[in-house]
Image (tube, rainbow, N blue to C red; front, side):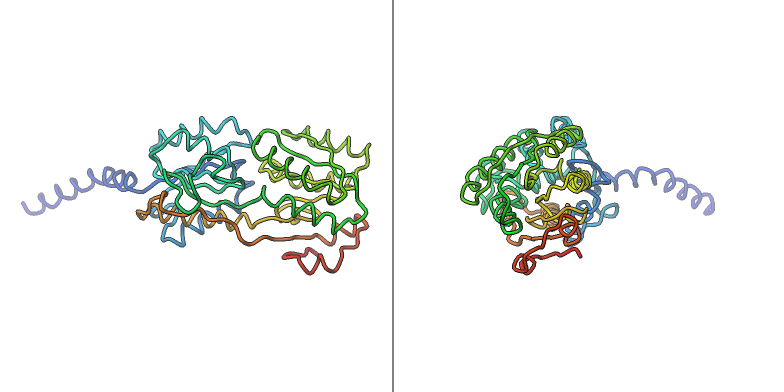
Length: 328
């Protein structure tokens, strides 16, 4: 009789086991990660986000789940991707690397916490009411890629003291960033002795077409605007710049590691780590309205000396002394 009772008890536990597992899964918080391009291109930044989560005690697959949604560079997909994450009942929406995604998410929900990492001013974008007290359901990191365009242009002058004609590549798909970048460059160029010509690119073919024109017009230098689409095409840009013999400046050190000449900007990977830490704090009960927006305070100048030699450029010693990264 006792043996039969034991067997019945084991059977009852076995029958209940799938439901127990399901209940555990349902109780595990889910973060919706909205990426700009794809998993391969953003692997390092995803790793940085996970690192930030780990700093607050969360490990993906153990006590937190992450649902990834990739825009593949198509900003018009954000509305559908955000709606999908909301229907998934995620605990947090992370809009990482693109201002448009943050704006779309903010418009779509006033309830689900949003953690952003953006290169544009979140107040101007309407995502937060102030940096110290964001208010509402969104907070995150402002990594200031747009605001340093004037500094980048000045560094280009330091590198190429005889240059006059500079072409600028912008992505009009990110309207706010493209307009801001153009306005800042137009303001700074006369004082530096540069004449600017602007080109738009939203596709791989647009980039190829622009460089074909550069090859005919022979500009002295290229300024690549800060944009996730261009970051995704950084190897293509570095190869084309070398092929057409056009020295170029970029927004982040990832371009320089891919063979680009020079970059100046924030450490975006560190911003993703900080965003991950904020996501972890929110999962532990912090309110986005009470978490001040983090602003980048450290910027990196990266120079690829090998690329400079290929262009026949002698990098000034004073510029090398300022560099955070020098690729020999």
